Image (cartoon, rainbow over all chains, first blue to last red; front, side, top):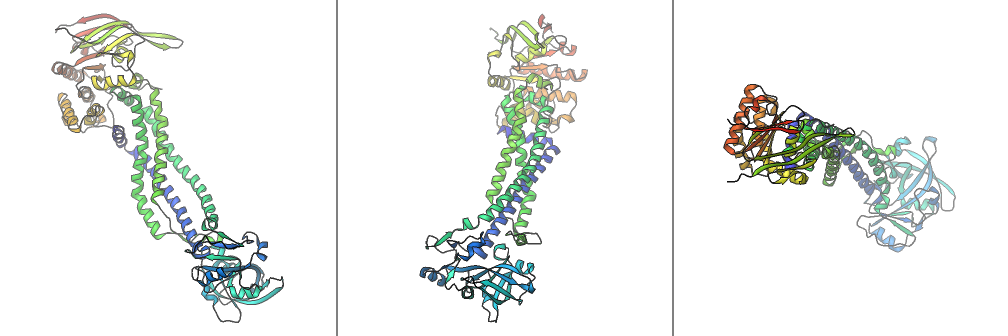
Length: 390
Length: 232
């Protein structure tokens, strides 16, 4: 307690030098929390969007389905059994049939995925109700990014060609009935969504599907033969990987920032011990042990980080509050780059994030403060009293 | 009534390593001091005054022989025990005052009491009393850079005296002061010696101080050349 009291007095007495270090350290604090908050916010939003647009509460994949291998698409479809059909009727599962096709917008050729989905589904955000349109062509909905890439608009009609289950080529006209805006590129780029019943007719695959999307409250322990259940941990792994990569980049950034703060404190400590030798000698003459003096100097250095918490919270809390409520607008969303990221990102700050950051910074600052301070234990007090220690 | 020795120095020698050999700063010193003395180690620079004072103050230890200070053998004290001795029983006054620069006068004087874990009220009373002895109550909020040399040394005296130690060790306390300030400082110390029965041991070659001493121990080349009691 005495060490804290004395260290506080010394820090306050050091004036501007203390506050410069504190401000640098507080910047490190705020930047780390801000950056981590951004990543957490992105992670959270990306997952929420992916769940809302694509994954629901998890997916059953037909056993041959591999989204990363287009050649599996010809085989990865199965007839749904009675139990599955019952769950679809109850609204617990959404069947999706996936096949390859080609569209010809304005005479250009574009290979795409045709995704047939139940137009009456209600728990994915895809505007599938727009597939329930009485027109001569096949109604199709596409994402905004797909529309932009292929210069398509609502009402555009083009030829769609596909190969049915027997390998026979067939073609028909489709009409874009809706263009939806989404942050989830995997439901947008290079694909069109049509009604599954129509898709099954085209493919000659009655009652078949490639994947079954589960409602979030659907029991996930039901095993369907020939189908593999993929939980959200599995499905969202890609997002976790992206965030992890970004986190490593972020860590490098705030490690550099922290290094600057540590360097400032280390430098202050080294200078302090050199300049304050007489003071150190006086402490010892007045009855402190060298260990206690090392303690004072260590606490003094470490206390920079405590003061930085307070200073950082003065401008950090309003900043975080403002950004968490209003978000940060990047002027474009990440779907253009194939990553799930909204145009406006809402940083997500948790108590755990703040506390962990504080603990890490305080502990590392204490260590950085201790390293030069331990030199005191080698000082000869009689030399220190004269300020002659080298 | 038998007077017990506060300090007993027996065949004390101190060597310092210099290059490959050693330099003898003190050679077979034998001295005794009793309670309430106002004595001084006198001699030119390099005579060993400060070295002896540092050993008595448990800031250094003898190479040979022994110094028994307030019943403790300095060479046998652990780091903790020597710190305890300095904290509880000894006061130090230095040539260059050694005040803590960022503390106020009040805080500087309060410092030794913080180490003794005294309560805030006790500390306040003791600090005010000590500042009263040296006449610095109007300056309690000043910081060392705002004080004159004489004022700084008076703060140092108050700091050394605030815990009412049994022994005060003063190393060239007037070396940086003019005649008038030296006079005030010495008068203050003499008064405290008389009123509180605190022993003072100086290391000095300043004639102004020597005039005040009741016992003058002359050192030359690390040995006691003369030990004389001066009747005033």
